[in-house]
Length: 163
Image 1 (cartoon, rainbow, N blue to C red):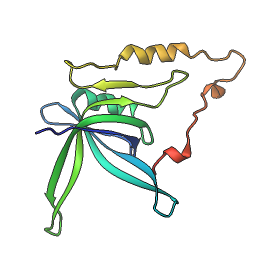
Image 2 (cartoon, one colour):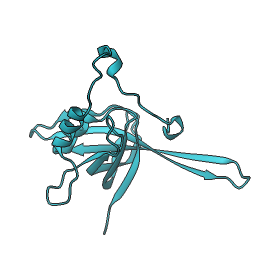
Image 3 (cartoon, rainbow, N blue to C red):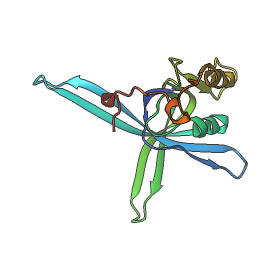
Image 4 (tube, one colour):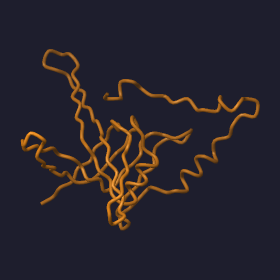
């Protein structure tokens, strides 16, 4: 059997980091993906899917440190069925994704692209802590402008945010 899922979307809420009794980190958040299509009558349609995602270990700590609501990411992991009994005694369930690797797709500063983090040390990982330091060092502030004007403009297309 094979259980693998890849999602690209925007985070629907800020990550929440917790630690298990054994000291392992767990971070939960949600991702929204959207699909645009044409309806039979020719009008544009859009379908949005909201999925809860869970990071473990070092990936959880990296996610908590760098991700915020609205950030675009790519996650790869496995689909999991969560089942529980609600307060009224009814059985409830939902699907969620346990993340094995992630890639941050929002650009930081003038550097295009993103950086990723893979929890599995044996596989290829394009996450490099030095990338973040280099990006910070590459940004030179203008000498004549006050500190508050050094914030770079962020070009966000409102149509790409699914919420």
